[in-house]
Figure (cartoon, rainbow, N blue to C red):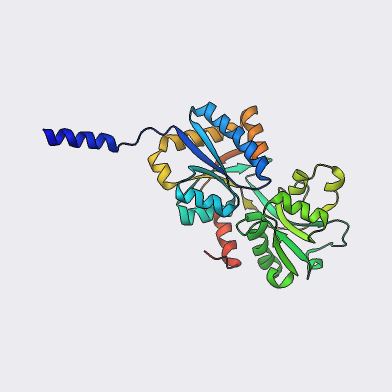
Length: 290
């Protein structure tokens, strides 16, 4: 009996205490201070809806966010499409939801230039300099570089004079506007370039008119909210609460306002791993290292 009693005590002590706090990671799509401010608004909304405390983690780059998910430092993460694919590979990431903007759950990558530089088509950029966002950016590197190869038979490493990384979409747009680079690859919400990163980050109509798009990719599945298989198994109730919360945010004014401020998201809908195959294919095209 004594041994049975001790065994019961040990069994009880091994049961984890109910989780009272989650950590949510945010990707650095734009200025870190802006993401931090809007991330905290999301955290307040989450706490009000679930009763759980929330800590925010603002990643310095896409790779850092994937690593934070892999190491368990964050429980959920807003991951761009390829970052999710990479996190699935190395961190057992599980996609929960994907973004919807202006009625569509996909977006594009566009290569932009200054409208007054005499660059009217992609071929005019031969030998000129281009800015990418980040080596792990879907619309800012992987998709456009692969699309140049598959759609135009252009090897970016031989075609452009110099390639640099801007670090974020807003920094890239400013680099093109200021003439620091001749072109840049960034996100765009339609094939005609009437709604893109430059419309979001440039405040004056005059500055926006100085930018035009000379190339657009095929559709890219929307960016995601993901967790890990381990967290989903151990904290199913929290994952279900979070998924429900995200689904409902687009249906109320406060929730939609927060999603819009955060990443210009209108709403979020369920997603599956299979939908992100175009990112895996693009990575193979450009021989992206695993």
